[in-house]
Length: 486
Image (cartoon, rainbow, N blue to C red; front, side):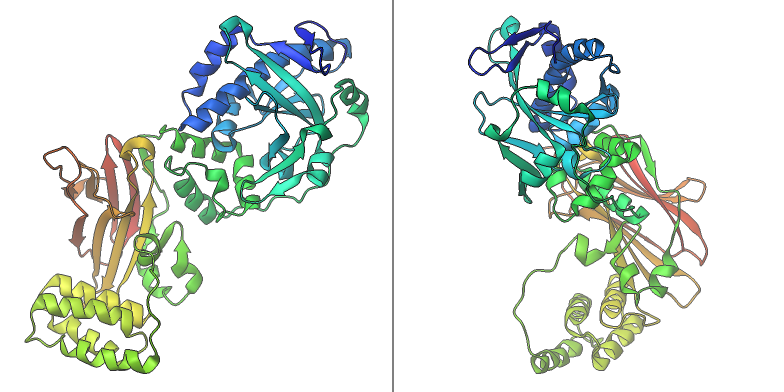
Protein backbone atom coordinates (compact mmCIF):
# COMPACT_ATOMS: atom_id res chain seq x y z
CA UNK A 1 0.00 0.00 0.00
CA UNK A 2 1.86 2.98 -1.28
CA UNK A 3 -0.43 5.90 -0.41
CA UNK A 4 1.48 8.35 1.73
CA UNK A 5 -0.86 11.28 2.46
CA UNK A 6 -2.12 11.49 6.07
CA UNK A 7 0.51 8.87 6.99
CA UNK A 8 3.52 8.88 9.22
CA UNK A 9 5.68 5.92 10.14
CA UNK A 10 6.34 4.95 13.74
CA UNK A 11 10.14 4.83 13.90
CA UNK A 12 10.10 1.96 16.39
CA UNK A 13 8.02 -0.66 14.55
CA UNK A 14 7.25 0.89 11.14
CA UNK A 15 3.51 0.76 11.90
CA UNK A 16 0.95 3.04 10.28
CA UNK A 17 -0.05 6.10 12.34
CA UNK A 18 -2.71 8.59 11.24
CA UNK A 19 -3.77 11.89 12.76
CA UNK A 20 -7.38 12.21 13.95
CA UNK A 21 -9.10 15.37 12.74
CA UNK A 22 -10.64 17.55 15.52
CA UNK A 23 -13.93 17.82 13.59
CA UNK A 24 -14.21 14.03 13.54
CA UNK A 25 -13.73 13.95 17.30
CA UNK A 26 -16.56 16.42 17.87
CA UNK A 27 -18.92 14.75 15.41
CA UNK A 28 -18.12 11.26 16.70
CA UNK A 29 -18.85 12.22 20.30
CA UNK A 30 -22.19 13.76 19.31
CA UNK A 31 -23.26 10.64 17.41
CA UNK A 32 -22.18 8.31 20.22
CA UNK A 33 -24.63 9.90 22.69
CA UNK A 34 -27.57 8.11 21.07
CA UNK A 35 -26.43 4.72 22.40
CA UNK A 36 -28.20 3.16 25.37
CA UNK A 37 -25.27 2.76 27.79
CA UNK A 38 -21.79 4.09 28.55
CA UNK A 39 -19.89 1.14 27.06
CA UNK A 40 -21.74 1.37 23.75
CA UNK A 41 -21.21 5.15 23.67
CA UNK A 42 -17.48 4.88 24.25
CA UNK A 43 -16.94 2.09 21.72
CA UNK A 44 -19.16 3.91 19.24
CA UNK A 45 -16.89 6.94 19.60
CA UNK A 46 -13.68 4.92 19.08
CA UNK A 47 -15.11 3.14 16.04
CA UNK A 48 -16.28 6.37 14.43
CA UNK A 49 -12.82 7.92 14.88
CA UNK A 50 -11.01 4.88 13.51
CA UNK A 51 -13.13 4.49 10.38
CA UNK A 52 -13.27 8.20 9.57
CA UNK A 53 -9.50 8.49 10.01
CA UNK A 54 -8.47 5.45 7.99
CA UNK A 55 -10.99 5.94 5.17
CA UNK A 56 -9.18 8.84 3.41
CA UNK A 57 -5.93 6.87 3.47
CA UNK A 58 -7.67 3.81 2.02
CA UNK A 59 -9.29 5.94 -0.68
CA UNK A 60 -5.87 7.20 -1.79
CA UNK A 61 -4.48 3.71 -1.88
CA UNK A 62 -7.47 2.32 -3.80
CA UNK A 63 -7.20 5.11 -6.38
CA UNK A 64 -3.51 4.30 -6.96
CA UNK A 65 -4.30 0.61 -7.40
CA UNK A 66 -7.36 1.21 -9.62
CA UNK A 67 -9.62 -0.47 -7.07
CA UNK A 68 -13.24 0.48 -6.31
CA UNK A 69 -13.63 3.32 -3.87
CA UNK A 70 -13.78 2.04 -0.27
CA UNK A 71 -17.13 2.39 1.48
CA UNK A 72 -18.36 1.85 5.01
CA UNK A 73 -20.36 -1.39 5.22
CA UNK A 74 -23.33 -1.96 5.53
CA UNK A 75 -23.72 1.81 5.12
CA UNK A 76 -22.84 4.72 7.38
CA UNK A 77 -26.46 5.13 8.50
CA UNK A 78 -26.58 1.49 9.67
CA UNK A 79 -23.34 1.45 11.65
CA UNK A 80 -24.95 2.79 14.89
CA UNK A 81 -27.29 -0.22 15.06
CA UNK A 82 -24.31 -2.56 14.67
CA UNK A 83 -22.29 -0.84 17.39
CA UNK A 84 -25.24 -0.63 19.79
CA UNK A 85 -25.56 -4.42 19.69
CA UNK A 86 -22.01 -5.69 19.04
CA UNK A 87 -20.08 -2.75 20.58
CA UNK A 88 -16.92 -3.14 18.55
CA UNK A 89 -15.94 -3.51 14.91
CA UNK A 90 -16.54 -1.43 11.77
CA UNK A 91 -16.37 -2.85 8.25
CA UNK A 92 -15.03 -1.20 5.10
CA UNK A 93 -15.77 -2.73 1.72
CA UNK A 94 -13.16 -2.44 -1.06
CA UNK A 95 -14.60 -4.10 -4.13
CA UNK A 96 -15.28 -7.73 -3.17
CA UNK A 97 -12.95 -7.57 -0.16
CA UNK A 98 -13.91 -6.50 3.35
CA UNK A 99 -11.68 -5.00 6.04
CA UNK A 100 -12.83 -5.08 9.67
CA UNK A 101 -11.39 -2.39 11.97
CA UNK A 102 -11.25 -3.43 15.63
CA UNK A 103 -10.25 -0.38 17.70
CA UNK A 104 -9.26 -0.10 21.36
CA UNK A 105 -7.66 2.54 23.57
CA UNK A 106 -4.82 0.28 24.79
CA UNK A 107 -1.43 1.84 24.10
CA UNK A 108 0.47 -1.47 24.28
CA UNK A 109 -2.07 -4.25 23.71
CA UNK A 110 -1.00 -7.87 24.06
CA UNK A 111 -4.11 -9.45 22.55
CA UNK A 112 -6.16 -8.73 19.47
CA UNK A 113 -9.78 -9.61 20.25
CA UNK A 114 -12.47 -9.89 17.57
CA UNK A 115 -16.22 -10.26 18.40
CA UNK A 116 -17.61 -13.55 17.12
CA UNK A 117 -20.23 -11.74 15.04
CA UNK A 118 -17.49 -10.60 12.64
CA UNK A 119 -16.04 -14.12 12.32
CA UNK A 120 -18.86 -16.70 12.35
CA UNK A 121 -21.61 -14.77 10.59
CA UNK A 122 -21.28 -15.57 6.85
CA UNK A 123 -22.86 -12.26 5.80
CA UNK A 124 -20.70 -10.14 8.14
CA UNK A 125 -17.31 -11.85 8.13
CA UNK A 126 -14.33 -10.02 6.63
CA UNK A 127 -11.20 -10.92 4.74
CA UNK A 128 -8.78 -8.88 6.85
CA UNK A 129 -9.00 -7.78 10.48
CA UNK A 130 -7.00 -4.71 11.49
CA UNK A 131 -5.91 -4.11 15.09
CA UNK A 132 -6.18 -0.40 15.86
CA UNK A 133 -5.28 1.78 18.84
CA UNK A 134 -7.06 5.13 19.15
CA UNK A 135 -5.48 7.82 21.35
CA UNK A 136 -7.77 10.70 22.36
CA UNK A 137 -6.19 11.69 25.68
CA UNK A 138 -3.93 14.45 24.34
CA UNK A 139 -4.80 17.88 23.01
CA UNK A 140 -7.52 17.98 20.36
CA UNK A 141 -5.04 18.51 17.53
CA UNK A 142 -2.66 15.81 18.76
CA UNK A 143 -4.93 12.75 18.75
CA UNK A 144 -3.97 9.78 16.57
CA UNK A 145 -4.68 6.20 15.65
CA UNK A 146 -2.23 3.39 15.06
CA UNK A 147 -2.69 0.25 12.94
CA UNK A 148 -0.65 -2.53 14.53
CA UNK A 149 -1.16 -5.03 11.72
CA UNK A 150 -3.73 -7.45 10.39
CA UNK A 151 -4.92 -11.05 10.49
CA UNK A 152 -6.92 -12.92 7.87
CA UNK A 153 -10.30 -14.48 8.55
CA UNK A 154 -8.78 -17.94 8.25
CA UNK A 155 -6.12 -17.02 10.79
CA UNK A 156 -8.62 -15.62 13.31
CA UNK A 157 -10.97 -18.57 12.89
CA UNK A 158 -8.40 -21.37 13.02
CA UNK A 159 -5.70 -19.97 15.28
CA UNK A 160 -7.66 -17.60 17.49
CA UNK A 161 -8.51 -18.57 21.08
CA UNK A 162 -12.31 -18.79 21.27
CA UNK A 163 -13.99 -17.53 24.47
CA UNK A 164 -17.57 -18.84 24.61
CA UNK A 165 -18.58 -16.61 27.56
CA UNK A 166 -17.50 -13.42 25.77
CA UNK A 167 -18.24 -14.72 22.28
CA UNK A 168 -14.92 -13.62 20.86
CA UNK A 169 -11.70 -14.82 19.22
CA UNK A 170 -8.28 -13.62 20.43
CA UNK A 171 -4.82 -13.66 18.90
CA UNK A 172 -1.54 -12.53 20.41
CA UNK A 173 -0.56 -9.23 18.85
CA UNK A 174 2.74 -10.79 17.86
CA UNK A 175 0.88 -13.13 15.50
CA UNK A 176 -0.38 -10.25 13.34
CA UNK A 177 1.26 -9.29 10.07
CA UNK A 178 2.70 -5.82 10.64
CA UNK A 179 3.49 -4.94 7.02
CA UNK A 180 0.26 -3.78 5.40
CA UNK A 181 1.73 -4.18 1.93
CA UNK A 182 1.31 -7.94 2.44
CA UNK A 183 -2.45 -7.37 2.58
CA UNK A 184 -2.24 -5.76 -0.86
CA UNK A 185 -0.34 -8.75 -2.26
CA UNK A 186 -2.88 -11.18 -0.78
CA UNK A 187 -5.94 -9.40 -2.20
CA UNK A 188 -6.44 -12.06 -4.86
CA UNK A 189 -6.05 -15.00 -2.49
CA UNK A 190 -8.73 -16.96 -0.64
CA UNK A 191 -8.29 -15.92 2.97
CA UNK A 192 -11.72 -16.82 4.35
CA UNK A 193 -12.49 -20.02 6.21
CA UNK A 194 -15.82 -21.74 5.56
CA UNK A 195 -18.43 -21.09 8.27
CA UNK A 196 -21.84 -22.64 8.83
CA UNK A 197 -24.91 -20.97 7.29
CA UNK A 198 -27.31 -19.29 9.70
CA UNK A 199 -30.72 -20.81 10.54
CA UNK A 200 -34.10 -19.30 9.74
CA UNK A 201 -35.86 -17.63 12.67
CA UNK A 202 -39.47 -18.40 13.50
CA UNK A 203 -41.92 -15.57 14.10
CA UNK A 204 -42.20 -16.65 17.73
CA UNK A 205 -38.44 -16.47 18.25
CA UNK A 206 -38.24 -13.03 16.67
CA UNK A 207 -41.01 -11.62 18.88
CA UNK A 208 -39.61 -13.16 22.04
CA UNK A 209 -36.05 -11.95 21.53
CA UNK A 210 -37.00 -8.49 20.33
CA UNK A 211 -38.93 -8.06 23.57
CA UNK A 212 -36.33 -9.57 25.89
CA UNK A 213 -33.12 -8.22 24.31
CA UNK A 214 -34.67 -4.86 23.46
CA UNK A 215 -34.86 -4.02 27.16
CA UNK A 216 -32.11 -1.44 27.74
CA UNK A 217 -31.56 -2.86 31.24
CA UNK A 218 -30.12 -5.97 29.53
CA UNK A 219 -26.63 -4.53 29.44
CA UNK A 220 -25.12 -6.63 26.65
CA UNK A 221 -27.69 -8.52 24.57
CA UNK A 222 -24.97 -10.31 22.57
CA UNK A 223 -23.83 -12.08 25.75
CA UNK A 224 -27.26 -13.46 26.70
CA UNK A 225 -26.19 -17.06 26.27
CA UNK A 226 -29.75 -18.45 26.43
CA UNK A 227 -30.01 -17.23 22.84
CA UNK A 228 -27.78 -19.51 20.73
CA UNK A 229 -25.17 -17.57 18.79
CA UNK A 230 -26.45 -18.77 15.42
CA UNK A 231 -29.93 -17.42 16.20
CA UNK A 232 -28.49 -14.15 17.54
CA UNK A 233 -26.39 -13.74 14.38
CA UNK A 234 -29.44 -14.42 12.20
CA UNK A 235 -31.32 -11.66 14.04
CA UNK A 236 -28.45 -9.23 13.49
CA UNK A 237 -28.17 -10.09 9.80
CA UNK A 238 -31.68 -8.84 9.08
CA UNK A 239 -31.29 -5.05 8.72
CA UNK A 240 -34.92 -4.42 9.64
CA UNK A 241 -34.89 -6.58 12.78
CA UNK A 242 -31.51 -5.25 13.88
CA UNK A 243 -32.71 -1.66 13.58
CA UNK A 244 -35.94 -2.48 15.38
CA UNK A 245 -34.01 -4.06 18.25
CA UNK A 246 -31.64 -1.10 18.34
CA UNK A 247 -34.54 1.38 18.40
CA UNK A 248 -36.07 -0.44 21.35
CA UNK A 249 -32.83 -0.20 23.31
CA UNK A 250 -32.38 3.47 22.45
CA UNK A 251 -35.95 4.31 23.48
CA UNK A 252 -37.05 5.17 19.94
CA UNK A 253 -40.37 3.34 20.11
CA UNK A 254 -43.35 4.11 18.00
CA UNK A 255 -46.20 5.77 19.87
CA UNK A 256 -48.30 2.64 19.47
CA UNK A 257 -47.09 -0.95 19.26
CA UNK A 258 -49.97 -3.21 18.26
CA UNK A 259 -49.94 -6.90 17.39
CA UNK A 260 -52.20 -7.31 14.37
CA UNK A 261 -53.03 -11.02 14.75
CA UNK A 262 -55.73 -11.50 17.44
CA UNK A 263 -55.15 -14.10 20.13
CA UNK A 264 -57.89 -16.75 20.16
CA UNK A 265 -58.37 -17.34 23.88
CA UNK A 266 -60.39 -20.54 23.60
CA UNK A 267 -57.48 -22.13 21.78
CA UNK A 268 -55.48 -21.74 24.98
CA UNK A 269 -57.95 -24.08 26.65
CA UNK A 270 -57.96 -26.48 23.71
CA UNK A 271 -54.17 -26.58 23.45
CA UNK A 272 -53.40 -26.85 27.15
CA UNK A 273 -52.24 -30.47 26.72
CA UNK A 274 -49.89 -29.53 23.87
CA UNK A 275 -46.64 -28.83 25.73
CA UNK A 276 -45.13 -26.93 22.84
CA UNK A 277 -47.97 -24.45 22.58
CA UNK A 278 -48.41 -24.26 26.33
CA UNK A 279 -44.76 -23.33 26.77
CA UNK A 280 -44.60 -20.35 24.43
CA UNK A 281 -46.97 -19.14 21.73
CA UNK A 282 -46.43 -15.78 20.01
CA UNK A 283 -44.64 -14.46 23.09
CA UNK A 284 -47.22 -15.73 25.62
CA UNK A 285 -45.75 -17.93 28.35
CA UNK A 286 -47.09 -19.76 31.34
CA UNK A 287 -47.56 -17.21 34.10
CA UNK A 288 -45.29 -19.00 36.56
CA UNK A 289 -42.41 -19.16 34.07
CA UNK A 290 -42.31 -15.44 33.35
CA UNK A 291 -43.60 -13.65 36.45
CA UNK A 292 -42.80 -16.00 39.32
CA UNK A 293 -40.17 -18.56 38.31
CA UNK A 294 -40.07 -21.70 40.40
CA UNK A 295 -37.72 -21.65 43.37
CA UNK A 296 -35.92 -24.72 44.72
CA UNK A 297 -37.94 -26.53 47.35
CA UNK A 298 -37.51 -29.59 49.51
CA UNK A 299 -38.26 -32.84 47.70
CA UNK A 300 -41.28 -34.63 49.15
CA UNK A 301 -42.19 -38.27 48.75
CA UNK A 302 -45.46 -39.29 47.14
CA UNK A 303 -46.98 -40.56 50.38
CA UNK A 304 -46.06 -37.33 52.17
CA UNK A 305 -47.83 -35.27 49.51
CA UNK A 306 -50.94 -37.47 49.64
CA UNK A 307 -51.07 -37.13 53.43
CA UNK A 308 -50.89 -33.32 53.09
CA UNK A 309 -53.79 -33.08 50.61
CA UNK A 310 -56.58 -34.32 52.90
CA UNK A 311 -56.29 -31.56 55.57
CA UNK A 312 -56.09 -28.91 52.82
CA UNK A 313 -59.29 -30.23 51.23
CA UNK A 314 -61.08 -29.90 54.59
CA UNK A 315 -60.30 -26.16 54.50
CA UNK A 316 -62.47 -25.81 51.38
CA UNK A 317 -65.70 -26.49 53.30
CA UNK A 318 -68.36 -23.71 53.13
CA UNK A 319 -68.14 -23.15 56.90
CA UNK A 320 -64.56 -21.86 56.54
CA UNK A 321 -63.73 -18.21 55.93
CA UNK A 322 -63.69 -17.35 52.22
CA UNK A 323 -60.08 -16.17 52.44
CA UNK A 324 -59.10 -19.52 53.98
CA UNK A 325 -60.88 -21.43 51.21
CA UNK A 326 -59.16 -19.31 48.56
CA UNK A 327 -55.72 -19.90 50.10
CA UNK A 328 -56.36 -23.65 50.38
CA UNK A 329 -57.36 -23.76 46.70
CA UNK A 330 -54.02 -22.19 45.81
CA UNK A 331 -52.15 -24.78 47.88
CA UNK A 332 -53.96 -27.62 46.13
CA UNK A 333 -52.78 -26.21 42.83
CA UNK A 334 -49.22 -26.95 43.97
CA UNK A 335 -49.78 -30.31 45.69
CA UNK A 336 -52.62 -32.08 43.95
CA UNK A 337 -51.36 -32.84 40.44
CA UNK A 338 -53.43 -35.78 39.15
CA UNK A 339 -55.00 -36.41 42.55
CA UNK A 340 -58.72 -37.29 42.05
CA UNK A 341 -59.79 -36.06 45.51
CA UNK A 342 -58.12 -32.67 44.94
CA UNK A 343 -59.68 -32.40 41.46
CA UNK A 344 -63.16 -33.17 42.83
CA UNK A 345 -62.73 -30.71 45.70
CA UNK A 346 -61.72 -27.84 43.42
CA UNK A 347 -64.56 -28.64 41.01
CA UNK A 348 -67.03 -28.48 43.93
CA UNK A 349 -65.52 -25.18 45.09
CA UNK A 350 -66.27 -23.64 41.70
CA UNK A 351 -69.99 -24.06 42.52
CA UNK A 352 -69.94 -23.20 46.23
CA UNK A 353 -67.52 -20.24 46.31
CA UNK A 354 -69.12 -17.07 47.68
CA UNK A 355 -66.66 -14.68 46.01
CA UNK A 356 -65.43 -14.37 42.43
CA UNK A 357 -61.77 -14.32 43.52
CA UNK A 358 -62.19 -17.75 45.13
CA UNK A 359 -63.79 -19.10 41.97
CA UNK A 360 -60.86 -17.83 39.89
CA UNK A 361 -58.33 -19.44 42.23
CA UNK A 362 -60.19 -22.75 42.07
CA UNK A 363 -60.29 -22.67 38.25
CA UNK A 364 -56.59 -21.81 37.91
CA UNK A 365 -55.52 -24.46 40.42
CA UNK A 366 -57.70 -26.99 38.60
CA UNK A 367 -55.91 -26.06 35.37
CA UNK A 368 -52.57 -26.84 37.01
CA UNK A 369 -53.44 -30.23 38.47
CA UNK A 370 -55.82 -31.43 35.73
CA UNK A 371 -54.96 -29.80 32.38
CA UNK A 372 -57.80 -30.16 29.93
CA UNK A 373 -60.52 -30.38 32.60
CA UNK A 374 -63.67 -28.78 31.13
CA UNK A 375 -63.94 -26.31 34.04
CA UNK A 376 -60.24 -25.56 34.39
CA UNK A 377 -58.78 -22.11 33.89
CA UNK A 378 -55.45 -21.07 32.41
CA UNK A 379 -53.23 -18.08 32.97
CA UNK A 380 -50.53 -16.75 30.64
CA UNK A 381 -48.23 -13.75 30.67
CA UNK A 382 -46.40 -11.64 28.12
CA UNK A 383 -43.43 -9.38 28.71
CA UNK A 384 -44.13 -5.75 27.74
CA UNK A 385 -41.30 -3.60 26.42
CA UNK A 386 -41.51 0.16 26.78
CA UNK A 387 -37.79 0.80 26.33
CA UNK A 388 -36.57 3.69 28.49
CA UNK A 389 -40.10 4.84 29.31
CA UNK A 390 -40.29 2.71 32.48
CA UNK A 391 -36.89 3.69 33.92
CA UNK A 392 -35.78 0.12 34.59
CA UNK A 393 -39.17 -1.41 35.46
CA UNK A 394 -39.96 -4.73 33.78
CA UNK A 395 -43.68 -5.47 33.55
CA UNK A 396 -45.94 -8.20 32.22
CA UNK A 397 -49.50 -8.34 30.95
CA UNK A 398 -51.29 -11.33 32.47
CA UNK A 399 -54.44 -12.81 30.95
CA UNK A 400 -56.36 -15.51 32.82
CA UNK A 401 -59.43 -17.25 31.39
CA UNK A 402 -61.95 -19.77 32.67
CA UNK A 403 -64.98 -21.33 30.96
CA UNK A 404 -68.49 -20.48 32.17
CA UNK A 405 -71.84 -22.24 31.77
CA UNK A 406 -73.56 -19.35 29.94
CA UNK A 407 -71.50 -19.47 26.73
CA UNK A 408 -69.32 -16.72 28.06
CA UNK A 409 -65.63 -16.74 28.92
CA UNK A 410 -64.38 -15.33 32.18
CA UNK A 411 -61.43 -13.01 31.44
CA UNK A 412 -59.15 -11.62 34.15
CA UNK A 413 -56.58 -8.98 33.09
CA UNK A 414 -53.62 -7.94 35.20
CA UNK A 415 -50.43 -5.91 34.88
CA UNK A 416 -47.69 -6.49 37.42
CA UNK A 417 -43.89 -6.16 37.74
CA UNK A 418 -41.71 -9.10 36.74
CA UNK A 419 -38.96 -8.53 39.29
CA UNK A 420 -41.15 -7.86 42.33
CA UNK A 421 -40.92 -4.05 42.27
CA UNK A 422 -43.85 -1.63 42.34
CA UNK A 423 -45.50 -0.60 39.11
CA UNK A 424 -44.47 2.82 37.83
CA UNK A 425 -47.12 5.46 38.60
CA UNK A 426 -49.77 6.50 36.06
CA UNK A 427 -49.53 3.28 34.04
CA UNK A 428 -52.94 2.47 32.55
CA UNK A 429 -54.62 -0.85 31.80
CA UNK A 430 -57.52 -0.32 29.39
CA UNK A 431 -60.17 -2.63 27.98
CA UNK A 432 -61.24 -1.53 24.50
CA UNK A 433 -63.95 -2.60 22.10
CA UNK A 434 -63.04 -3.94 18.67
CA UNK A 435 -63.38 -0.40 17.30
CA UNK A 436 -61.10 1.04 19.99
CA UNK A 437 -63.71 2.52 22.37
CA UNK A 438 -62.62 2.43 26.02
CA UNK A 439 -64.92 0.20 28.09
CA UNK A 440 -62.97 -0.09 31.34
CA UNK A 441 -59.74 1.44 32.58
CA UNK A 442 -57.59 1.42 35.70
CA UNK A 443 -54.42 3.40 36.50
CA UNK A 444 -51.53 2.71 38.90
CA UNK A 445 -51.15 5.19 41.73
CA UNK A 446 -48.29 7.34 43.03
CA UNK A 447 -47.13 7.63 46.64
CA UNK A 448 -46.23 10.88 48.42
CA UNK A 449 -42.71 10.78 46.97
CA UNK A 450 -43.98 10.38 43.40
CA UNK A 451 -42.97 6.72 43.21
CA UNK A 452 -45.13 3.75 42.33
CA UNK A 453 -47.55 2.57 45.02
CA UNK A 454 -49.26 -0.48 43.47
CA UNK A 455 -48.06 -4.08 43.14
CA UNK A 456 -50.55 -4.67 40.32
CA UNK A 457 -53.59 -3.29 38.51
CA UNK A 458 -56.40 -5.48 37.18
CA UNK A 459 -59.71 -5.70 35.32
CA UNK A 460 -62.28 -8.51 35.02
CA UNK A 461 -65.17 -9.11 32.62
CA UNK A 462 -67.10 -11.90 30.86
CA UNK A 463 -67.54 -11.46 27.08
CA UNK A 464 -69.80 -13.74 24.99
CA UNK A 465 -68.10 -16.34 22.82
CA UNK A 466 -66.60 -14.85 19.65
CA UNK A 467 -66.35 -11.28 21.01
CA UNK A 468 -63.36 -9.30 19.74
CA UNK A 469 -61.74 -6.89 22.16
CA UNK A 470 -58.44 -5.12 22.74
CA UNK A 471 -56.26 -4.62 25.81
CA UNK A 472 -53.99 -1.61 25.97
CA UNK A 473 -51.22 -0.87 28.46
CA UNK A 474 -49.92 2.69 28.27
CA UNK A 475 -47.52 5.03 30.02
CA UNK A 476 -45.92 8.36 29.09
CA UNK A 477 -47.75 8.55 25.74
CA UNK A 478 -46.38 5.15 24.69
CA UNK A 479 -48.63 2.10 24.57
CA UNK A 480 -48.78 -1.57 23.63
CA UNK A 481 -52.04 -3.14 22.45
CA UNK A 482 -53.09 -6.78 22.15
CA UNK A 483 -56.23 -7.95 20.36
CA UNK A 484 -58.21 -11.00 21.49
CA UNK A 485 -61.17 -13.17 20.48
CA UNK A 486 -63.14 -14.63 23.37
